Length: 299
Ligand SMILES: [Zn+2]
Image (cartoon, rainbow, N blue to C red; front, side):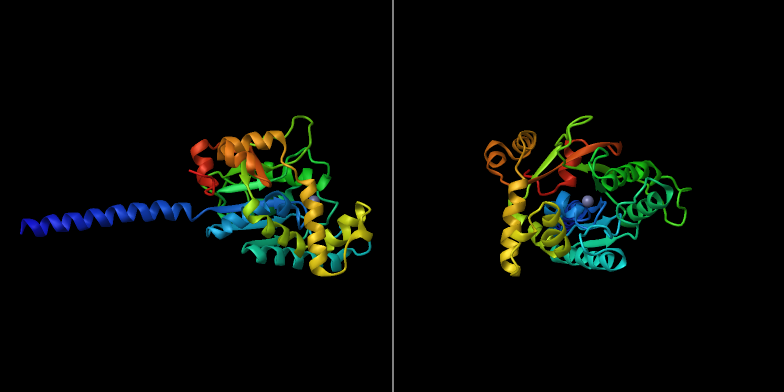
């Protein structure tokens, strides 16, 4: 009889520990990440690599383009270009298993007003966001700057029930972080977290490859390189990879952050990285919370 009781206690203990472990793993598996870019392809450049990593681990990622991109081309424009770019963004998201949506605000005309702010508040709430990514407010492009300001303006309001009462407010304020940039004024980007993306760089480039209107038409035209773009899809992908890789060298500050998070060997070896700076608004993460939010960091 005593043996049976002992066995029951043992079985109960095993089930209990199993439940705790399952819950702990379950929490890790339930991250909701949302990134806001001004244009359909901005989020890909800031966070396409980490998005591919989250997606591979079963986390949910949503990329939101705050404008429809209808100004981003040298020969096309308006509704036809917006439709083309919406489809390209959707395809980019499909390639790594994330959602990618495009809001219908005009490209080149975004302002930090109530309309887009409320769109962003509702997006964060519906996604039940744990982590929100966005550009910094000192970027060169007005749409990028105002996307940043809109997300910052939404950072507190997302928790206020009387704001956009049609969409239940968040009880827990998300962590807000900025994409990396190279702007120095009023202060340079600070890489609080840096993620090695060498293992997913092909996926990131595959997302770029989906934005045909941008990576093979508009951006090369703007840089005066249009005559260098090969016609063949495989050849142009190789050309684009080389072109983009040259522009994305790891900065000394990012290298230092890589060494901090990955140790000297792996940190120095990394060729490609994405890094993020903690915003002063929203939940302020400690190191442990950052490790939870970026579960692919080495333990
Ligand atoms: Zn942009």
